Image (cartoon, rainbow, N blue to C red; front, side):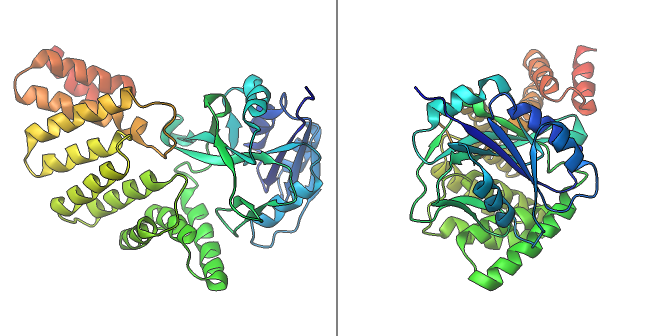
Length: 365
């Protein structure tokens, strides 16, 4: 069988810190590597050239799709791997074999783990993205911001990959997120003026307004997105999560938050986080027995969650909190042994949490 040729591509501007790791993670798999530079003033271009990457130049025009499509037009591989400079594969040696396995349709959706590099690589969330696709004249990026690979002739045929194609993403760490969000918001608003408000804009606006703490707008655009007839491939979990959190910040009633968490469970019963959300809300309502069961249910759903679940999830970042709540319940009923066990599990998840350590020490003392 003919070996599949892969082109690895990036667009970059002042990415000298992150780009080398991304390049190294794909070097073994790629037959060619292309960086489209949009105006770097640091060492990005020189770093890429020293790494053996072809560097092309494209003047920035406030459109993330344009330089991506420019890269596609210059690529020669059978398939294209298009990473952001702040993304890198977790298992570089397995990338080529995995791409060959899944290169059966037009695009491969791969799992992405979003981490906060400024906080000890703490996991923030998980999602799926079409980062690998066939080099074909009918496949191009669309959108000024939150751009996606699109079939110009119709519906995109895609397949979900396994964990071998997992990438880590560091670009939305706490130190740089606000400037990115304001940039993104300006581009989304410009695109809405040009094309009219569409569901994909509502989804993108939820992320922007949540990060900028404009919570009423999170609820407005989240509800519009969830009510749309456009079927989302992934992302409903992210919408429900940010809407519930926005309600908390706006001090909406527990009953209103409970209704939304139950809606999320009906829509996404395979995700553990919304059982935990329901448990948190039931605590506020004083329904502690029900809350206790919901926390246990969330952990059970998490343990048996199959790899075929292809939805955005943030539960890994919340497991420590779930164990902490269960520890508090056990303390409340005088079950010190179970409380110690749960505080220990919470501390395993969040080893730097001083409150968890203090509570566990109190029980041991």
